[in-house]
Length: 622
Image (cartoon, rainbow, N blue to C red; front, side, top):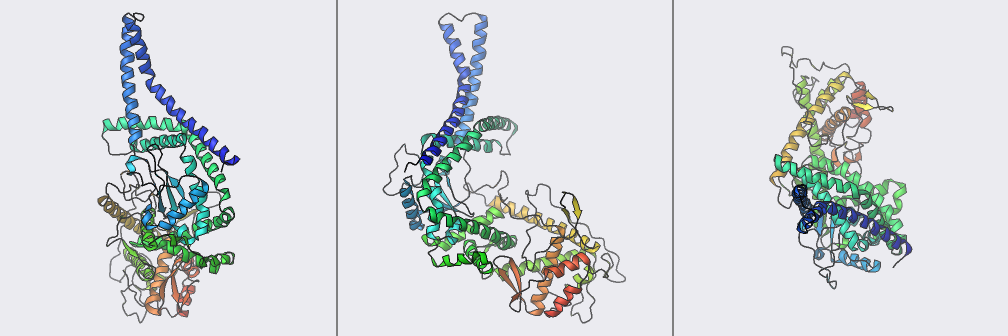
């Protein structure tokens, strides 16, 4: 299989690889240049040509310079050679746990006439790639495939990394079509020049990471800074060539895979986009609320199938996708798909949220059947408890509605009365003879609190997702503009923001300490000096209005569950939801917004009366 496109892409990649190697050769030439000059001067002295005090001084100066340069070059080369290249966090899939998957990959490699990948691993992402793990720091090389003995000079093929959502959503034929151009990349990777160029670039990148690691003493810090400067200089010199080399490899692999399941690949690419959308929605709407409660869903990949099936049911454009579900799913290629799904789900939780590498009392798995009770209901009650703590700190008096069983208990009526335009003053005393209380403002989180906002993402679009009050957005011209809201809602939203920021900062410090205590020699370090920091946080900033709306909605949901027989539920596309009489409460958000923006509790009180929810009754909090 030697098409014109394949040869053109491979030739372009090899030429760029030679350019990268020329950068390495020039650096070596610069390192040995003083030594060459010293040899010339010493040879001239031995032959009687370069004699005299001036030549003797030059010999000493050049000799010392040559020794220093050679020592520095040896040190830089040692760091580049021994530095551990970065690898993606993955879940390894041994051959005994997925023989059918390995067989499919090797058959595909035979059809493409390229070396088969040395191993297979899964990543909690909607992508697939080849990753070279032949460095000695990554452990011994994988065993060769049966019938494919690797000679002593044969480079180890890269590892095939597959996105775990693909295995559950795609069918076997679709997965084979998607992996064809990826596996075809093992052909150019086996070329000695391309392999050497990649090793050089990865070594430089690893050397930069080693030199940037904190915690060293001043002498070692200076030496590492010098090594990092040299490595960055070499990286700048070969960056463009390395980029073009990878593009040539990708072009050659794509051309080589044209003859394998090309028609099916066009259809499979649609499934890639759909799986990405479902995976992103599942993580931000469903998994993130659970992670914030110290629970991690143990069947995320199976949840993708449920989410996309629900999308197919609601969206007419996706109706045709449900007919695929009768075909064999790619996860059947695994011997124990449940165990693999659990491992990938835990890795996703660590990547996107942070936390220990193993389950514990504060970091436990949760299945989808228990999600409404352990995550949805608990999230609502935690938010409701926080809301009432802030009201207590503001000195807001309890509800005085007639017939209230517990006048001092946490009731929804207290929230409605406070946010209503004509309600009780937020700073008024709770009793006529009680002095005015001035609560301190909770401190904000530190500036270096992990690089991401401690405020979580908005929750369900039906029940807990709202707009914002008390925050400041950006208009069309990029100017900051105040969001709508009454004085009371703005003050309450600001206090909620500070309180939640303080809680999240404390939880983050505890999570960081737990992760550091459990850090082992083979554990993945997310960031230098911070083993508990997730590298890809999924917590976008919520405005103060969104926080207030979410907390008020949580209080309404608690009152509905405790007084009207409503039940918490899980919506695969929108996350936590409330079921009233078996139907989703889809019209609650506008009523909450009217309360916090206009101070008008009328629409929300009417909505509560329709469903028989009693705001004057205390609710159970966490």
